Length: 252
Image (cartoon, rainbow, N blue to C red; front, top):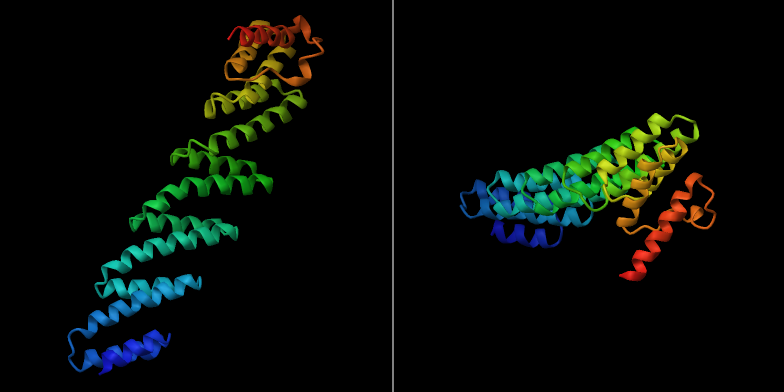
């Protein structure tokens, strides 16, 4: 009687009444009621998850797990991933990371795939806010976790910006380190190759500059557009190399 009553109350969303009915059935010695109660907590977690009541859903799933409901463990991992996504969108990075990591510990493979993307997104947000050191750390964590699609180019772009800023201040040593760091992260970054070649040209390092320009061409770049028509850079390196690349492309 009490299990049927509990199930009916559960279907009406009357979770506390349903729990009381199931507990009364357990007290009266109905063995199957424990399974009903565990299942109810799992289903309660599902409903709360849909309503984005993350903490309440987690508590319900944990209650179900404690009572031996195996499905609840998988649902909890999935729910924590969803929680991480929602927290990420709200800019609550620390909480989101914790949710993702806990989801991974629970065996959710999707969360393991999403964590590198999360760190890349965190890097973008921190970079926009001007927290470049923290953004760099986030990008590097994304790369460490296996993101070879987005984070390398994003980090390289940020390092290029650092190099340009140092170059404009006349600090060529730091500028070169930033460009080289960008290339370590993203070896085919033609923007970094162009920047490095331009910096080397300013310093009269013609052979090194030519090598970097040619490397940029090998990666599919035509050399900086602003230097193509003018041919005013000493020894006209970009212009000459751009002409060579046009000959090569016409042959191929």
